[in-house]
Image (cartoon, rainbow, N blue to C red):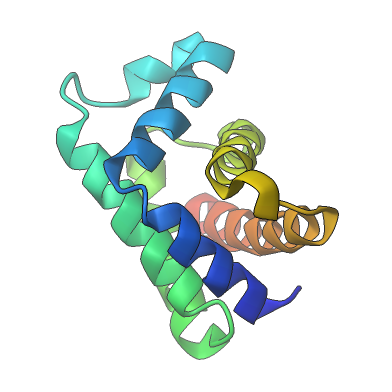
Length: 133
């Protein structure tokens, strides 16, 4: 996983602002309609929270001493929202679809591999923390 490539790509994607979150949730809910019930009726705040969390994760992708405790807290918080291990693969698929969409021509197999590896770490830490309580 190339941390700098992830950071550079996220700068490009994040430049699209709240459109990124709109696309992500539209993809997630279209593919998994039952997931919509896990979220508040108004998604405005949730869009901002998603982008802030992604920004923090990408910022610390090469600093496990900061990243892991942050992800553990997120995992415990998400458990409280009814999120379990079975939800993470669909979220990862929608995240990659969103990143691919907003990356345009700069998307590559290497970048997809980087994001897949990074999400694997994120999902693994969050799932474990969520299961432990």
